[in-house]
Length: 284
Image 1: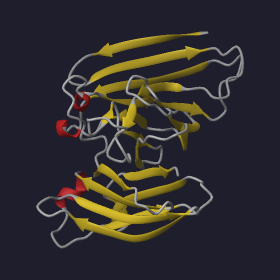
Image 2 (image 1 turned 90 degrees about the horizontal axis):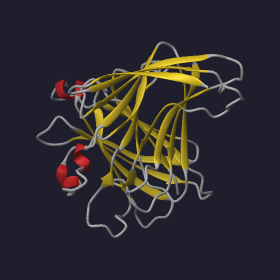
Image 3 (image 1 turned 120 degrees about the vertical axis):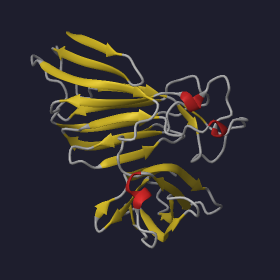
Image 4 (image 1 turned 60 degrees about the vertical axis):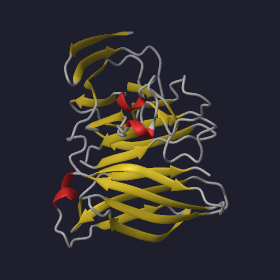
């Protein structure tokens, strides 16, 4: 049982201030606070278009997270044959949301759905939410008519019966916001599905933020990491001619066990981040 209060401020960015008070009657182990849903069928990181004529079909293309320690994360959405759940542990998160970052109409070619105009949604907690996890759930789909993407905050200890739970946050809907993040951002994630079954070639494009003001002769350091189930190779960081954008390329060879491989990448200067941290799960 409980009650919700919504205060809506429309505008170029529509803000919804949410205050909730809940009284759980039973223990809820996997509770979802400030849930968001969206749709992702296929995009630039998908191996095919499932026979469709449009290059990409999605309402959102990534999960943006601002962790309690100030680190910005970007996790591109992906299509998979089975449900994929990513759990990002944190304490007192400062924000998370499902974003439609790609605004180029030519990438969608859809004059009816207008996917290039779909809004992004950002959850900004009011106060401290304690320990828990930002959970991203990606469900398989064979069309564009179901919201198969879910993101929410899960308190570490769940909801306990007989305890009052207060939480508040601001939900922001917008097209673009240069402060989310203020660092350089990953504009594209392209995965080369080559004939080698246990190998992937990854190409990332980073743009904006401090990258726009780097000295002409400076090359950022590409901090690339893969977990113990993969082997990293051939890391390159190359400036795209005529722009202030940078492309990071690398290869990953996975073990033959079929386990998912976790990857991370960020551009740094003297140990300080120039960009958000790109994270990705390669599910074989």
